[in-house]
Image 1 (cartoon, rainbow, N blue to C red):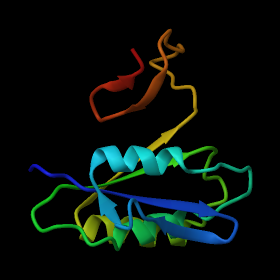
Image 2 (image 1 turned 180 degrees about the vertical axis):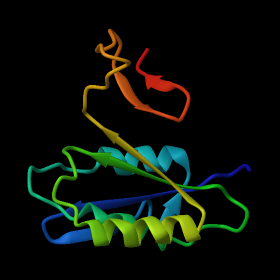
Image 3 (image 1 turned 180 degrees about the horizontal axis):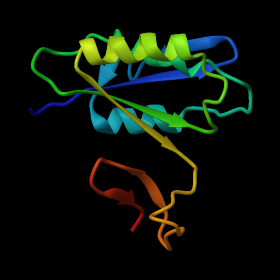
Image 4 (image 1 turned 90 degrees about the vertical axis):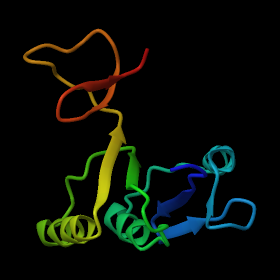
Length: 129
């Protein structure tokens, strides 16, 4: 599918909130990059599940592959299992693929790889080249 659109949701101690790019909730990749560059980051505890739910309610176009990518600074150790299960059900029922990118060391087998890994699929790791 061409003419892909991207949305951006920030979250802080006050909750999640959509960021518009040139006044639009969804925009092309170049505008998305500008939106990301305008974000500021803090060390406050935040509600990532609220942001995921808000993203799941975006007005996706019919026929597109729906993806949500969470850029996470820390771990989700404080997630309540019930909330996680509800979000998981919502994403699955809407056929939304969910990805997490965070700064974490990955192990391949019993060793840490030389290259930086950003994440992995079921089959291969995604590495920084």
